[in-house]
Image (tube, rainbow, N blue to C red; front, side, top):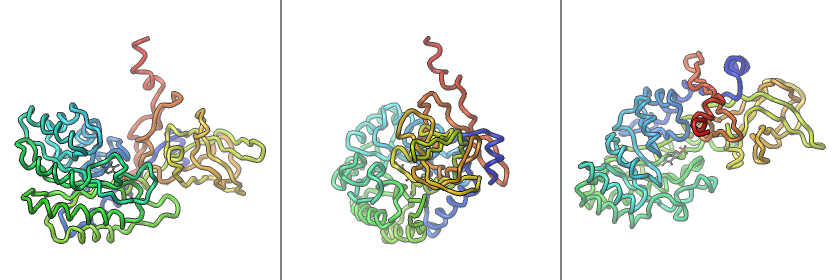
Length: 398
Ligand SMILES: *Cc1c(COP(=O)(O)O)cnc(C)c1O
């Protein structure tokens, strides 16, 4: 990929996504489940660009959404309603209503009071809401605490006994149809044994539910498959899929999987230009035009992103920092790069997931442009935000 040419054509900071690589990630995961019915629901929050969603829809993916906004994005991009699921710990009445009106596949219910709301809203609409219940299997995903979700101390899902009670209630309701069972224990999981452990726990529950004539058709194993940012284990998709199939022990269900990071993480890069180098005593800083408002992960989780220079030269240690007025505004710390000067280009790798989608206008900085590369050609899929875009919702109130 010619990063220099892209940076000149579209300016920086710039997100670039390799759509062909995304297709190969999707296809690899899909074929790992080949022996069984499966639905890969791409987790929209990882990267919700409309053109990227359309690309996923074209590949045949479904969508896992965590807000009505994401559902509307997916539908706008060409998603089939019966391949859309709605997850998330705090759905509003208006969101539930619109999701039901759109006839999506199912709502992943996260608690008892939410089940009551869904039932009430379905009744009001004279509908039967297809639901699954998010079970919290109390399994340690062994990932960063901010992205771990499958322990009782996390806010997500319900414990096994509560789940059972909820399924019985749903079975006896005229307005609820329990068709799925769901778990999602965290993100960036590189030891898949924890996902398999959760699958085994939830599979036992599913068998008990079937004995109670609650006909679960979708076994939703969530997302969370980790990727290589630095020196992590590469997750073996075959072992992952085989582990889940083994956990099912022959139960005839469609496996739903909700990968976000796995599909897009390694397929995106953030291109940034060097503004200056500066030294505070011996400490070397490279100030670039991308910042924490463009890529929050280093600041938020001390996440590692490999950064490469397009220029060679003798290397020395430096921090890569952005222009934002926060000490936490860095993209990397203590990495080795050659001496750099204004207009040199740096490439931040593996920034396709939770990069642009977590970006903001902090410091009144316009969001970066986004470009897709497909079949060897590049195209703009989101233009750079202008000052006018940023103030659009305020200026009429002056
Ligand atoms: C965030 C999330 C995902 C995607 O997680 P990744 O780690 O990006 O695969 C899937 N399902 C649910 C419910 C989520 O909240």
